[in-house]
Amino acid sequence: MTTTSILINICAFAIALALTKGFKGTNAFRTVFFMPNLIGGIVLGYIWQTLLNGLLSMWRQPLLALSAKNGFIGMLLLLMWQQIGYMMIIYVAGLNNVSPDLIEAAKIDGATSRQILFRIKIPMIMPSVTICTFLTLTNGFKMFDQNLSLTGGDPGKQSQLLALNIYDTFYARSGPQWKGIGQAKAVVFFILVVAIALIQLKATSSKEVQQ
Image (cartoon, rainbow, N blue to C red; front, top):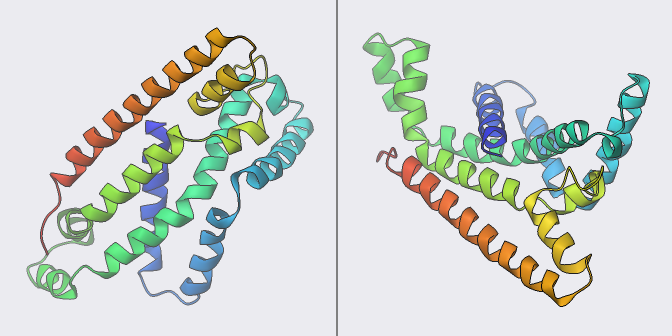
């Protein structure tokens, strides 16, 4: 999930950077790219299940429910497609708030486009980086409905993520002992997500600068 979070943020930032160059039709593109975030996870899961299973059948590869590897890759693609547009909007807002005077002064001093990007723009949008990294990490760990509709944990529960595994332990198994195990997993899961989120917030917040 950490790798997926990094990929989502890199893609979203790259698209946001391109959209702030003043190209025609950027507003329409932003709207279309943001729309996947408005679709429910269950619906997205079934849409991507149909799409990916069709492609896998054409390529003579195991279907999502028959291959844990393909199911996991499918969930990564779905999560990235759903989240990139939302994170892009946050990055666009951050880039638009970077003072043009700073960029103009850097150009007068002879700074290259690469130096302006890494020395001015990225440091100035660190609050956006903090928010987007936090959201992508927590959304990745909390991924449930997409996992349920895309693979259902098949084959043999090998493609279950943490949230679906906790649900399956608590509700899909009979016996009071499984209720306790499910609750214990939920507590550990909560502590894990909070710990990772706090570490990430501290790491990125320390790099924020005042405009």
